[in-house]
Each structure stands twice: as C-alpha cells, then as structure tokens.
Length: 492
Image 1 (cartoon, helix red, strand yellow):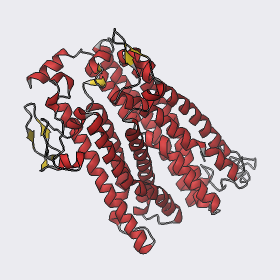
Image 2: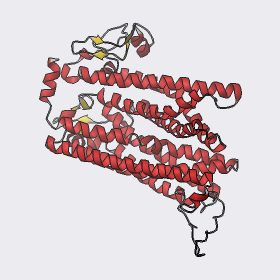
Image 3: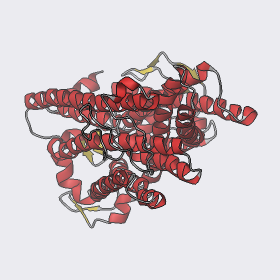
Image 4: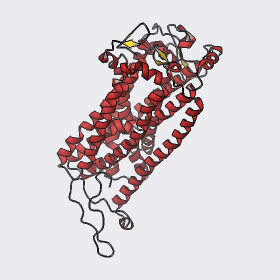
C-alpha cells in the first residue's frame, strides 16, 4: 500500500484528468469501430447474395445497411478526429520524442480514412445509378480500406507495447529508425488479427441482434430471417477462430510482455505450477481475495505444462509495474473478455447443431434472446480488451522506455477537467443524434414495408427496388406533381 501511495504522490496533478479524458473518448470511439471495420464486408456479402440469386430482399437489406454504414462513418469522423488531436495535446512528450518512429501507423490510418470516405460516397451514389455488378465491384475495395485503417492503428499500438526499430543516442533520443521493424513489431500480428476478428464478430452479432429482436416480436418474414442469418453465420464461424487467436495473443504477451501477463493473471511472485484465478482481487501485499482458484492452470495455459515458469510482478521494482489496483482492473477485464467469449462459443455451437440437424435456425425463444444480447456482450469484450491492453502496460506509455507521467501535457488539471466535462456533453449529443437518425430510418423502413396508407401521406413508401426504375411521382391534393422522384441513394 505504501508503494502505491508514493507512486500516486509522485504523479503530476494533470495526469488523472488527462487519462480520464483519453479513456472516455477512446472508449466511446471504439463502440463505432466494429461498424467501420466489418459492416462494409457484411453489407457487400449480402449485396453479392442479392445479385447472384436475383434476390430483392437481400438487395434491400444491403442498401439499408449501407445507409447505416454512412451515418456511422459520419459520427466516427467526429470521435476519431477528437482522438487524433488528443494524442498531441494530452501526450506531447510521447509524440514529440517518438512520433518519428511510430507515426507512420497514424499516417496509414489517415489515408485509409479518406479512402474509405470516398468509397462510401461512391457506393451510396451507385444505388440505381450504376449497373448492378459494376456497383458491387466498386464497393469491394471498401472492406480493404477499413482493414488498412485497422492496420495503421494496431501498428502504432503494438509498437507502444513492444517498441523496436530504432537506436538511442547519447541523449536518449531515438535515431536510425527502421520503419519496417517499427511497424511489424513482435505484438503486431497477434494484436491485429485478434482485433480484426473481434470487430467482425461484434458487427455480425450486433446486426443479427436487431433481427433477433424482430423475431421475438413476431416478425417471422424472410426479410428478418435473412437479416439475422447472414451476419450471425459470419459471427458464429469466427467465434471459435477468435478463441484460438485470443489464446495465441495471450501467449505472445506471456513471452513479450511478462509483467503485463503477470498483471492480467495477478501473479505476484515468479514461480512454476502457478494457479489460475478467475476474477479475485490482488492486494498490495501480494495476497489474493476472492475469486475461483484452479491449481497449476496458469502455468499450463502459458506453456502447456505445470512446470512452466511464470514471471511475477515482484520481479521488477514497484515503480516499473502496475499497482495492485491496476493489475486487478486488467485481470477483471481479461477474465470478463474470456468468459463472454466462452459463452459465445456455446451460442455458436447451438446454432451449428441446429443447422446440422435441421438445416434451419433454432426455434427456441431463448436462442433468440441470447442472440439479441450477443452484440452488446461483444461490445463489452471490445472495451475489456482495450482496458487489458492499456492498463496492463502501466506505468509505461512506451513499454520500458517512457512512463505515462513523462508524456503528459503541462496543461493545468482544472482545464483538463473542464475539457472532459465539455467532451462528455458533446459526445452525449453526438451519440444521441446517431441513435435518433438510426431509429428514424428504422421506423421509416418499417412503415414502408407495412405499406401503411396513413404513412404514405407523410413519407414516400419504399416501392423502388435498388436497381429497378423509380416510381412515378405521386400527385398532390391539388393535382400538381409531388412525391419524391429522386431520393438520396441508401437514405430512403
């Protein structure tokens, strides 16, 4: 406890608000990332099905998903731009000293961002205006641009976890930068694939969850069945794959960042035959309160045998490792992520069993209840994965080279707290606007599908197919031409 108090006393007063501000904006932005990375692929998959099978229902779904994709991208512009400014404003010590080494990753992400914006505009414009297959193939680069953006961000983050590709001069400044090594660090591969598959799983379960709710409310038509089946199948296939990738990523942390691994597993002293604790709390004296203890399992998971030696937190000075509180936070985040992932495997197996036995989706309402919750559960795992990665690395912002306290801005703490309050208000408004727009689109689409006579006087029904001729303008009460003859593509 004394060491923790000393560490907190030595921290500059602006460190806490700077951390809180960065944590809030990043935690908010990451909720949108699955849609930006994976929704273009899922949309194009549905689009391809609609063209190949001449299926108007699939094309309608693809068109509507592309509208949501565009709205999400617009919101992502706001939250992503805030993050890019915060890197320089809140952590000038890191960017000023190390920017030349790992900054290329952010450059790649910026180029991918602009490319994705152009491609989304072309894809939205192409509905009804381009030949069907021409339109589809112009959309194919969209997922590639999204993956390139993820490449840039993960390259920068993996470098912060396992920095390399430079040499320090006599003053401790990085020189002789090797860009290839700085991008392809030891943690890049495990982090990148773990992140990408997580985004595809999350987007798949979230989209499917919308139609699972519709099924529970009695909407059993083909539109809801197809809207559920395709994204859920993508997510279910990737779920066991992600479990194996996650296990490999954790083992990479064990080898490349042993102190972070010790925090994730709350291992206090270096030893063999180390037990695994599910949850539990690490105390400042090294004891563990609560949790489920499984003898020897941690050593077995790390090295496939009980005699595997696991590095403990006390192998380094207290100033070079996470505090007991930080280790407990990383440990709980890691265990929540693993627990939810294990439950999702059971859900995917339930789905696979039904298809193997009956060539149909499960009929149980409990299955659809679980499916409706799966997307939200995935968002929780995404947040927990970020917490594990960032909190487990403490006190380093650049692992073993620069502490977070050395990188933080000199801005007064009171100003940062004020900024945090303003950002929270703005983000509540931005996300509120996002939800309002999406819900209005959903309502409009539902009215159009139901063909309500009352609705036609207020909103034009969606009678046009994505590639068919437009409807003739509807006359107004006075007999003048009215209606909407050229509605925005994708927006309905």
